[in-house]
Length: 76
Image (cartoon, rainbow, N blue to C red; front, side, top):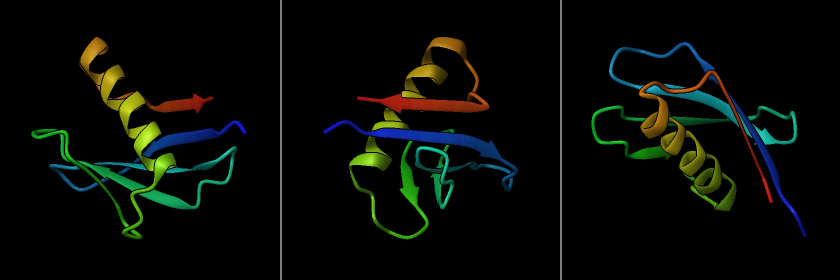
């Protein structure tokens, strides 16, 4: 069974990057990335497969482009 996770960057306090994310277009969770260490956490505490997949895509885009993308999509 496939999975599609979408994320969009939202305003965040200095020193953090925040994304709303969820399955398809349900942006019902918040992902927080520390731009210095690239460590990520989810505000609800459930760092599951969806959170891991979208985090990997975002961090890889940052490594390739030097900036955190406004939007990201993971599909498997």
